[in-house]
Length: 617
Image (cartoon, rainbow, N blue to C red; front, side, top):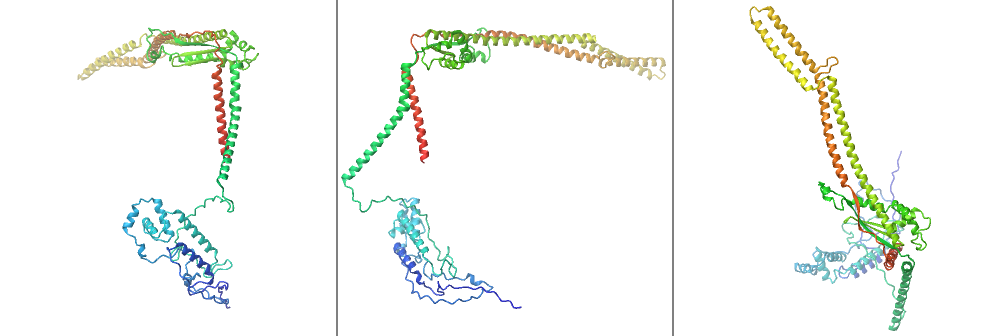
């Protein structure tokens, strides 16, 4: 069986023939040459004009479709240089060719010129601008100062940013035009047959520095060319017209501002002034000042911080605050209503509607009016309580003030009386409890003594121990005597037996006595147990007796302190009925109303302006 080898076919398009193997450009490169020529003219002396390309031969005839040989197994043709279709002509967007190494004599710089430029004190921004300008003009410089020197020698301003931007725009336009021209070797959107790619490094690469383009500022439309020029009279009339329009707008804004001020500030202030000067009922205020003092015995001789603060306002600060809170409470208002008829006084028809209390008003409405007409203040630095009572009649105002002072005195008495009673009650209860416990401890000791039949356990134990000691001494003697008898070669049996009997009896008696001290015999407790119980009972009795003495002393101290806790209210300024109205203060109240309405309007206008600005932005 024979297998037909598969071959890859390559087609050369006759529409875009590519000259192979010889330099030169096709006839389609005439626009590119024109662009390059214009670029050389724009750059001036930086780069030489490109030489005219050699005559382009006529395009060869269309080659018939041929079949290329398949690639060899080595694959070496893939890395051979390919023809890109431009011959030796430069690419339209490529950088201009650089001058030969060594440079012209004019390009040679000296250290003196560089030093003079360095001495000018150029900023870093200027030097960077000069370096970019030199790069755009194709000038090679080893430093920023050398770039400035070379640009100046060629007559170029190193620091002209507009020229640099114009050069950037020209390069961009040239690149765009070159990109819009169809390149040889491409047709109907296809790639060149050689499939050559643009190089980004090495020989022939584009080495230009591309900077971001600046935004072209908006141009003000110029007047039409056919419009006649304005003379002095027309210009003056236009200016006067603009000024009148501005003045009219300003008058309209001022009118709107005055209207808003009149509605939000002047009119409410006018109504408030009319009320204070015409409608408001005259009110009379009775002022009173009093202080709460503490009865402290001069011979008491207090100790500690209490003695330092005694007799000062700090000692009665809590009582003063309590009295102030009581006078501002509903309880004081209800007592004043019950005693002096507070609601009936402020329900009179002669009082203006704002200050009048409606007939049959609730206690809450009366309490609101009470807080407005009874003002209590406390000065902690001086310890004074200042009270101001306002009423429609001066005598009623004085009566209200005296009634409230009597309520405050009763409140102070109740506060101190309860404190004294609490102190004495606690001391008495402690003493009585200690006394009961002493009696119980004494009864327990007596019960133990009667139970065991021993008055003093210590003496009883000492007697028992002395007997044991005597018997042990006698026992030692008998043992010595028995030893002497047994040392004889022929001791008397009767005497030996008698001595041994004595020793046995002594040991029995000693053991019995020790058993009585530590062990329970029948219903009789041991002497050690009885002694321990009695000692515990006696120690408890002594402790209770000490607590009883301390409780007695504490009760005496409490009695002394309770006598010191007496409080009384001392008048500093007694209530006196006024003969002229105290309120309203028409001018001050009207001015205050104006300031309040002005502040409210200012806050509202600022808020509206801020919201308008936020919405518009």
